[in-house]
Every structure is written in C-alpha cells, then in structure tokens.
Length: 105
Ligand code: HEC
Figure 1 (spheres, rainbow, N blue to C red):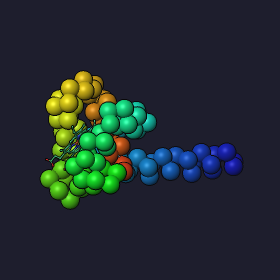
Figure 2: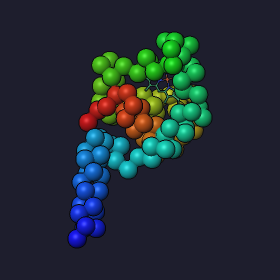
Figure 3: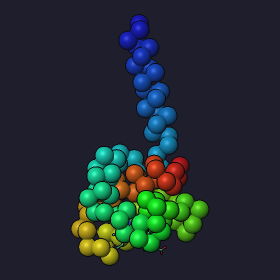
Figure 4: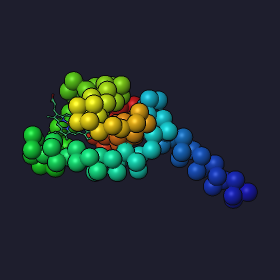
C-alpha cells in the first residue's frame, strides 16, 4: 500500500515538473544542453558583450519571447558560429536556457 502511495506521489511530481516544460522542449536532454553550453563557451562571448556572468544577454521580456523564437535563436547561433549541432542538441540547449532564464510555459 505504501509503495503505491509513493509511486503516486512520484508520478504527480513528474507530471508537475513536466507542466513547466513547453511542448516544443518535451523530452529535451537537459544534461546534454548544459554540457553543450559549457563546451561551446556561449557565456564567454556573452560576457564580453554584457559583463557579469554573461547571463544578462538573455532577456525574456525582449524580442525572444516564445519557446519557438528561443530555439530559433539557438539555431541561428549554431549556424553563424558553425557549431554543427544536431537538431536535438539545439533543442536541449534552448530547453536549458528556458529552464534557467526565460521560463516560457
Ligand atoms: C561570438 C560571440 C557569441 C557566441 C560564441 C555566442 N553568442 Fe549568443 N549572442 C551573442 C550576441 C552578440 C548576442 C546579442 C544579439 C542581439 O542582441 O542582437 C547574443 C544573443 C543570444 C541569445 C538571445 C538573447 C535574447 O534574449 O535576446 C541567445 C538565446 C544566445 N545568444 C544563445 C547562445 C548560445 C546557446 C550560444 C552557444 C552555443 C551562444 N549564444 C554563443 C554572441 C555570441
């Protein structure tokens, strides 16, 4: 009985966590996204532009104001910087930026 109860609580927690993720980013590999952001030194360049830790470049209230536009922006960086990222890698990066900065639902 107790096992079923904890399973229920777990499923509820998963469902709630899922609700925070836009459909476009469903199933995104967040660990992969975080690793790619570090590997490609995204922050180093942003820091030169805005100072601090570079995260001030991410402006949820700015022109990037939907999950689709955020993913598109990451895709644009991918192309411009010749990163040769796979589509699912672009999505995972966008999902991490969304979790940490943009918080689109
Ligand atoms: C060579 C420098 C450089 C690198 C490397 C770089 N960026 Fe950027 N990024 C910029 C600049 C400059 C802007 C601001 C563009 C503007 O405001 O028009 C920007 C803006 C952005 C934005 C939009 C911010 C907003 O809310 O308007 C996102 C998202 C972004 N970068 C993601 C990334 C990711 C992810 C990476 C690594 C894969 C990356 N960038 C690597 C220079 C860089």
